[in-house]
Image (tube, rainbow, N blue to C red; front, side, top):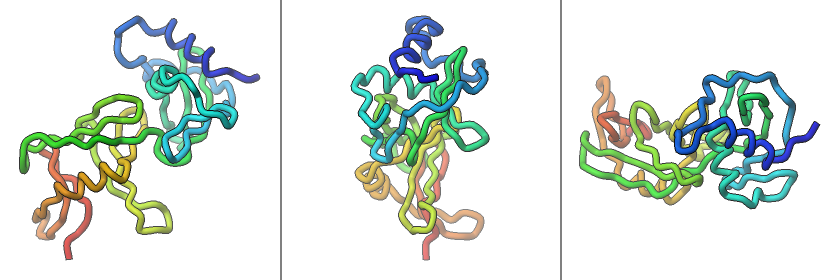
Length: 189
């Protein structure tokens, strides 16, 4: 059985009242419907059967029904269907890093490639890891339902401009403050 992105979008629009915010994904638990040939490329582009999904509204909607489950796979979930998709890296990209305030009072925010503005903090923490087998940094902000948004290079450089040095548990670390939380980027020395 194959499913088209437009059909999934229609199901979500019917299940969600207009203007009600994010779909209640935590309340939807349908059985696996199968795999759907949707790939989210490392560059953030959503592809269906190898072709870009042309309607930005569908991509935005799909980003709200996407979750990563304990098995490590990504799924598009509706009230009645659950489709496994392929994600090459993080499913969303974060750009346009903004900083307001200073020091421990600083608040950082990013905008995702689907137009959502996220404040880095307890609910959406920043994590700086590396790609397997390399020292290449992999900065991500955790969003919801196991989904991450990876900071694009320009946003990561903007973040690096805000780095400060802190002493934590007797060790000096470098990182950034946001919403009263210190996010380590690395050790100093």
